Image 1: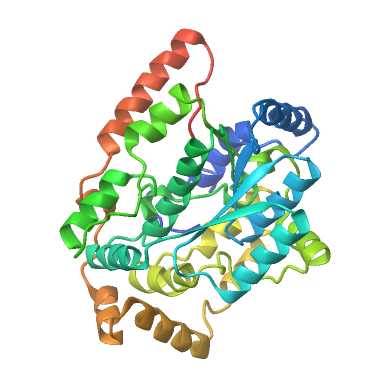
Image 2: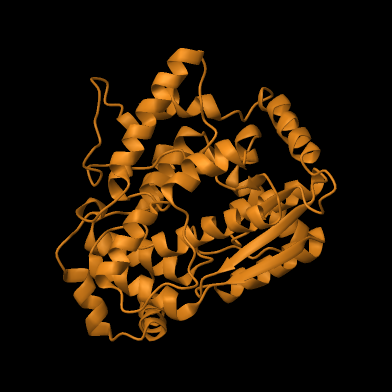
Length: 368
């Protein structure tokens, strides 16, 4: 990490707050060694017991990326009964579609693909581009998680399995992005910059996500990869050997939108290189050295010909000119906090949580 994160701080020994936070806070939720096995077993037993007479015991979100794909293999080994949900927001690469088909066929899982209304998705994308904020992935990310929760509710399923993990995502500069689950922020941006109503795009409100689902409906988002040794390169090799998985050139390469957003839009407009937190995560989890990471950072983010082709497709898909896209790159910089957001509610909730934890003497972490 570097000072492209304005909130970075270094102590007297030159160690930054990201590494300190990982050691002091996140390790409490990361158990890659033998101590993770009983926790994982307890989680699996609880999920199985929740099934009852229903057909499925969990929802598994499958994006086509390495993390969720590897988790699908493990879920098959653990003999769980997932309803696999894939959300097609209009940007799937052909490679991602092929990888998903290979996985589902190999695991014999039931797959439900939720195809997002493209005209509404396009309008949301353009709204966020006009807003000038960094996190342009919110429209995709929010509908992905919202769809998992809505499917879980409709099917009476309490557990959602996520491939998210601290081994590869333990370092994250919060100053770069607002929350993808902030429906207040999403709708305020769309209200200001959008051109059509959102009739089919379903969001999750603050109360639902943080209170109703976890405490009243007792729903949980579980991240099993945090309870086992998870080495990304080993996971990829197992996927290649087992199902013929085809790797992507870049992290999140399964989405053509995210590919352009992370590898061109963010570094060009804001100076944010998403490889930095990704490689930093691999460093603190012991999968990479700092020297190896610096070598990776020295490589170009995009091949010029690939960038030209991808931008051509990107603009045609959104039905904008290249000049309009370049205008988004040069517009005044904005933050998600320039628009209504759930920040005040979230801080209040965390205060209540802190008081409750002191009263009962243990952590409350039912929501994710």
